[in-house]
Amino acid sequence: MTPDANNNQAARPELVERLERAIEVAAQSMRRDFLEMVRPYELTMTQFAVLFTLRERREPAKISELGEATLTPASSMTHTIDRLEHRGYIERSGDAHDRRAILVSLTSAGLQLVDEIERAHSQYFKERSAGFTDDELTLLIDLFERMQ
Image (cartoon, rainbow, N blue to C red; front, side, top):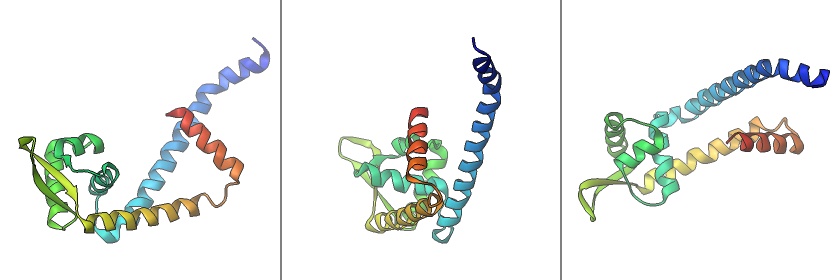
């Protein structure tokens, strides 16, 4: 092993630790900013995640499927669905294939809300990335894609 390779191996745990911390701090900052963004809508992260998931699916979902998609326990999911339904963002219906199952779908008000928040979120990322060159953005995207 060359001396440079030894130095790289010795520094690697320190670099990995810095990477971990940088990702944690960036994620925490973006999560805080996102919560601030949705505050006027009086939504929690889980509530938005349910609405977003329904929009992305483009079809009704079982409550259990929404719980899995949003990493939310069934006990919390029922409360979340109740609140979103009460506010008119989602509606429940029976499943024609399984009489025991309840399907949840987005209402037009829910779809409009998700689209509005998504536009604000997109603008947020445009502003956050304005200080990067195209090459830096491409490198960042490539690196994150490799981590998936």
